[in-house]
Image 1 (tube, rainbow, N blue to C red):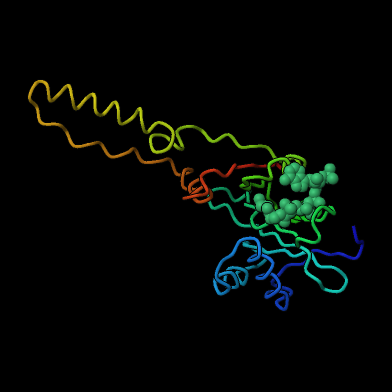
Image 2 (tube, helix red, strand yellow; image 1 turned 180 degrees about the vertical axis):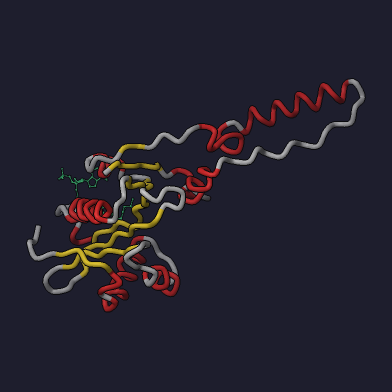
Length: 199
Ligand SMILES: CC(C)(COP(=O)(O)OP(=O)(O)OC[C@H]1O[C@@H](n2cnc3c(N)ncnc32)[C@H](O)[C@@H]1OP(=O)(O)O)[C@@H](O)C(=O)NCCC(=O)NCCS
C-alpha cells in the first residue's frame, strides 16, 4: 500500500465533493443532486464523511459515520467504498481502522453497519453479526403466519356460536428500538445483515 495516503474529512475538502459523488454513484447509482446534498451534510458532529486520498489528491475511498439516534455512544458506518482499481490493496481495511480511531476520539463505544456480501471482510476487522431480538420483528416479519392463523381461529369459534366476527386486531406497537432496525433494514434491504463492534 502506498505510504502517501491520508484520511481527511470531506467537509474540509469541498473540492473533492464531485469526485466523491462519482465514486459512490458508480457503485450505488442515485441522483447526483441528492448524492451531493447528502455528502454536503458532512460535519464534525456527524454525519461525517471521510475520504482517503493519495499524495496527488486522488480519491481512493470514502466512508461515512452517522449518529445512532437511540444510543449516543454508538454510530453507524455507511457507504464504505474503495475505487475499483485500488481494491484488494488493503485500503478498505485501512479506512475501517482509521474510522475506528476517529470514532474512539469522538467518545463512541460501538460501531454498527449493515452488509449483504461483505460479512467476511467485516468479521476480519472484529465485527460480529448482531442478534436482533425476535420481538423486534414480531408479528410483521417472523410470526405473521402464526399470528394471523390464531386470529382466524378465534374468529371461526365466535362465528360458530353466531357472534359477529371481531375486527382484526391491530398489530402490536413495536418497541422503540425497532425503528432503528427498520431504518437500516427497510424495503429491499431486509436481506442485509446487521453487524457491530465494541471499540
Ligand atoms: C468492501 C471494500 C471496501 C473492501 O476494500 P478493499 O480495499 O478491496 O479491501 P482490503 O484490500 O482492505 O481487504 C482487506 C481484507 O479483507 C478481505 N476481503 C475483502 N473483501 C472481502 C469479502 N467480501 N469477504 C471476505 N474477505 C474480504 C481481503 O481479502 C483482505 O484480507 P487480508 O487482509 O487477509 O489480505 C471494497 O471491495 C469496495 O469498495 N467494494 C464495493 C463497495 C462495497 O461493497 N462496500 C461495502 C458495503 S457493506
